[in-house]
Length: 139
Image (cartoon, rainbow, N blue to C red):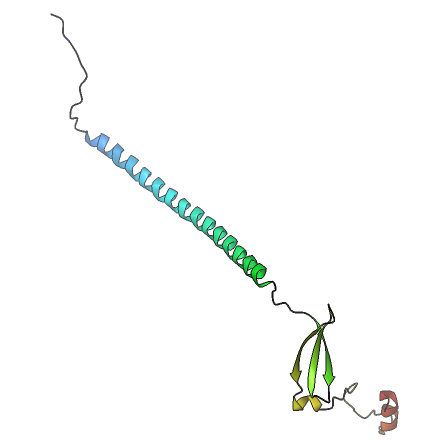
């Protein structure tokens, strides 16, 4: 009779060299896994930031739409009403009345805009020529 052969699944024990090769491969795979997980976290973080920004933008637009307005800095013309003792604010973009507020007692203080600090002018002889300075200032 002829020898017959078959391949069967049986226990095989690794040599020390094979174990070192397997350990080296395992270490490489662990490093690759850690790097892939770090990349995944970075990508997830970027995507989460983008999603959060879009969500906030949608919420802000939704609030503006449902309210029908938003607060903006708009230039106003201020007109005193001395009889009622109020300042009236009018929008410069539409001319509409915006609001009024009481005139503060400090608002009654007279403002004087001096052109420059008033100092005497000394000519070459050392005399004070205050009249010349006052004529130049316009008083």
